[in-house]
Length: 316
Ligand code: BDR
Ligand code: CA
Image (cartoon, rainbow, N blue to C red):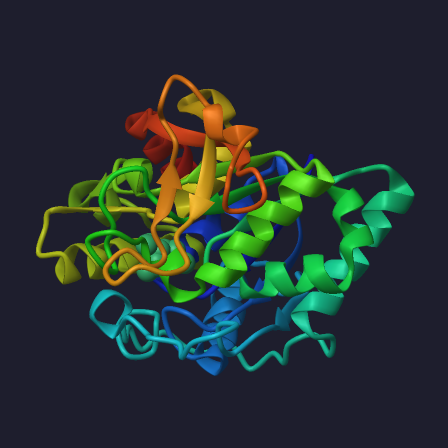
């Protein structure tokens, strides 16, 4: 089993990711940490506990993390996730209380244990990377417990929060920049599962309506139906869930190594991930503006059918 941690801002598609990570037999879900993003932190925590309960995994530790990005206010996305972040489904809410530790402390504890045991953990950030930046700045030694980081965020092409920037990176660009540079310095491999593939793992309404027989299946069906309704479409992508598929089944994802930077200024481009796809890399060694960019595996294509099937057979 592959040990993983999810960092989430649950969120309809974070919920799709949580159901998959909590139920797939190849993954050992060690912890889930929460951050403000799609909705406020209180809702994120309740939604996360609720989804884990529906997945039959009330045993997984869940911790509260940062409510706000490092430098700017949080800007929620009720038009994409509903006012409660779970599509206002009226799904019965979990009464479980989260772990007493702050998210950064839970991350530290799990990762230092991984260092001791030698069983490194894959970190899957599916939200603004505030918690991860705080972790790597506060407890850099914990990075030795990381096998890799596979994050949902960014885009080589167009954005969604703005024409330039993807929501998770746009919400906390400084955090993303810190995580990328720290990962580069500490030698942690990084994969960017960005908007270039994010929409390509789709579940049709027909497939969703065939999901039945368990609480997890009913929630999975409701999530896809709600996402389809919000996008006024006959199918919906599992969004963040695709990044978890990529950890379970890396062969379904095509990636290429590119230097990656985060735009921290700019009138219309703040939060953009600048993927340097040039076939020469002169500025890797002579960047006049400071440190060299981190080279990241950028997802360029996904086998959407393969990942959709993986999700459907796991969540039902
Ligand atoms: C990302 O932003 C959020 O709306 C989703 O949960 C996903 O993590 C997509 O840009
Ligand atoms: Ca998310």
